[in-house]
Length: 336
Image 1 (cartoon, one colour):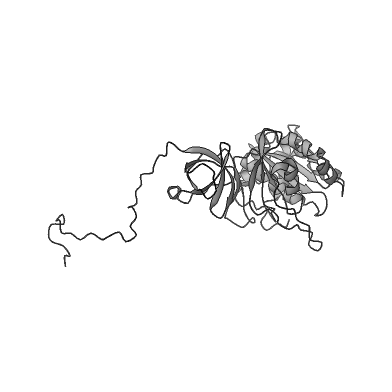
Image 2 (image 1 turned 180 degrees about the horizontal axis):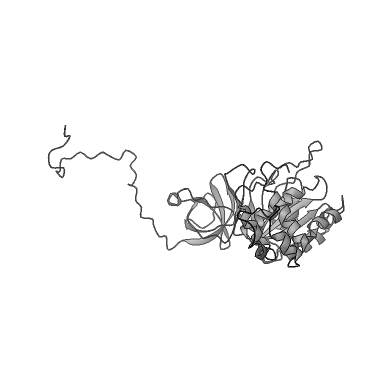
């Protein structure tokens, strides 16, 4: 049975009203050519704090961005009220292409990727020498994530007044990346902060580490004019720290060019998102030796061509050991 007449173009065709009273959807997106550029400083429950020129502006993501989310470090385009006054809200209408993305998963079996920060070029891996005890496998996981994201690693060892750094430094000396050792006294008198600041100058550096390692204390020393929430303690029974930082925050370095991004303390650093085949790219002295490897070689098996490559003197044996140690961190359900 026809609901309408034979001519479907008649003027008396019933049109269903739009009950919501909003505009019909369209694939045409506004250009917002007058949008201003800004940097995302922190994200909290759908509200994004951005720096636009010298003003701190609160913003929300525009509907036209769909599921695309902005994270700390993103360069974004904003429209609306950009005055930064109280109770004003701007809209983020574009997210610029990222130069780097640091990701992690909850564990090696979790397929859900979490973007830690965007557009960083250096990863500071903060580890306490005691209270809590250092966990080398966590350092290895962070190194894999840094290499995969194209970030330069920096090892920051804290609490050297409680334990010497020699053993840990010996284990990582062959990886050939910068490190700095700090103590509580040096943080209080400013010496440690100055040494760390020299390594951060000119970089956008993300800080990662377990809870209780002194990460936020170090950030407070680097940016004394904009101190984060109070630091926490380490549980005497579990040896684990208490989370004191609940969201990532980007802060401009004091007396230097660059940014530090303090991130919440993590219990683990899953690498489900990292293809093991990409880890070799962080070892340019070993990569040519993989040409003769068998198909799908794990680089840690009997027929791996890297053993012959190193034996012929093309690379230091310690470098091959370091590569295989990093690859080993991707074994499923490996305990930290």
